[in-house]
Amino acid sequence: MPEPADPGRCPLCGGPNACALAGVMDALRSGCWCASRRFDAALLARVPAESRGRACICRGCQQAAAPAESPA
Image 1 (cartoon, rainbow, N blue to C red):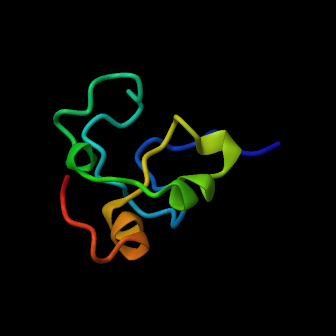
Image 2 (cartoon, rainbow, N blue to C red):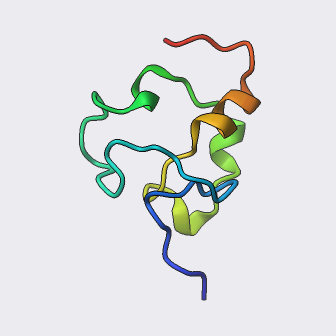
């Protein structure tokens, strides 16, 4: 059985995700760095099922997936 997701860790690389709302995924994201970013569907599909909706992808993984992407 997989371990529960750590809301403060990126589910892809395991590093800190700097989520301003770690563990509060249903809340508005207005205070988090990710609120102004787009996450590619292919990147989101890489998140393990047990971490979906429980842990945010970190800025590094988001930028690596979309290096030319600018804030929305």
